[in-house]
Amino acid sequence: MTLCCLICESKAVLSQEAANAAVLLIGTIDSFLFGVRQVHTQGLEVTPETRPESLLVQLLDLIGESVSSATSGYTAMTAFAKDVQKYQFGHYDYLCLRCGARFDRNADI
Ligand SMILES: [Zn+2]
Image (cartoon, rainbow, N blue to C red; front, side, top):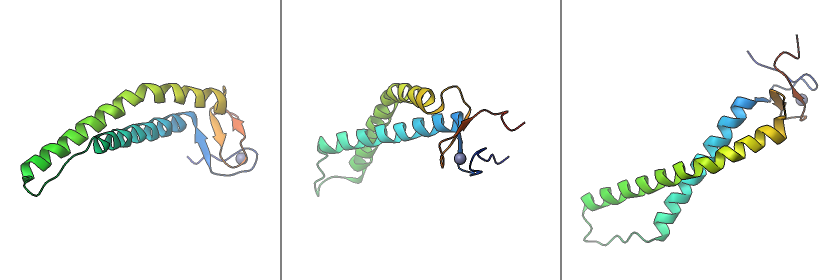
């Protein structure tokens, strides 16, 4: 079911659940990329003598560090998601991204 805004009839309506998922997804990706950058700035030295096996180990280390960073950032993103719920949605279920109207699930009945 496509929901439309009650004010401007835009279809760009975001539910609380979708906003929460988007915040957590963006935060997780951001933390993952932060972990990648941290590992990169620590300096992975690749020499001509580096064997393919060691490159694979370096890649797995990079992924491991990045996943660790992503999971540690999840707590901070959960708090941020709660702020989004509180300040953007209040007690309403939906937010129109075009006009900013907020409304409840059963408002059109
Ligand atoms: Zn609207």
